Image (cartoon, rainbow, N blue to C red; front, side, top):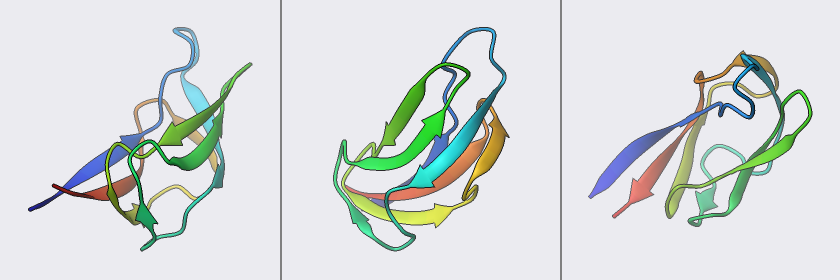
Length: 81
């Protein structure tokens, strides 16, 4: 059975409302492993690497790069169960 999980822009700091998507480490359609680096993001003072929540496929990249609001969906991973 498969399920799709939305990847959301995380909150690095309680006072920050925007983060920057810097670089995707994987391409749409690529197989990913749980905890594998997917995308590098930048907060006001912090760099963060969003990792895969499961084994599966990077189904869709919604925000390829640039500034986004915290909590915005930036991509989707299709998980294998």
